[in-house]
Picture 1 (cartoon, one colour):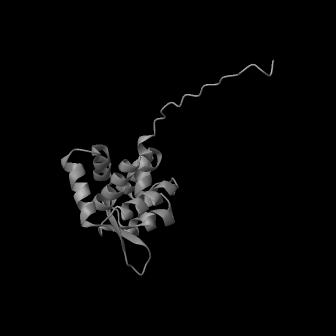
Picture 2: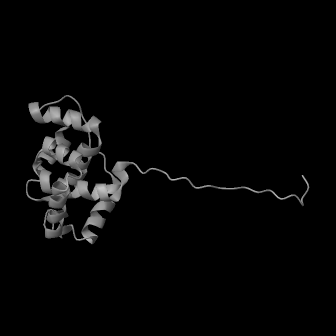
Length: 155
């Protein structure tokens, strides 16, 4: 090749779809709906949030858990996955004023603020995140004790 010849390369950036479960707005909705609809005390620990998050995004975890919940026994042993993106979403939600840290001696807990409660109400009234609301209704309320029991004894 002659060094005087010019080589032209053209790069075109194409849009890349971000999976729905990795979109920040959707994950903020999931976190707020989790605390609002699935947590008995209106607050949640990180362990509880990760447990509920696994129920929402992992059907392979949700099925056996729902079986366990109905019969209170299952030979399967499953552990919810810890999702680092969930931690980041909780930080965003706290920064946006949707969640607030609750001072509890047992450890870190978050609860919905008034703004977070309004956010969940607006999602419901505008019929957004209906699939998340449906999952929350299917899962029902989960106490911290239930999470501890399931994780200690397995399901």
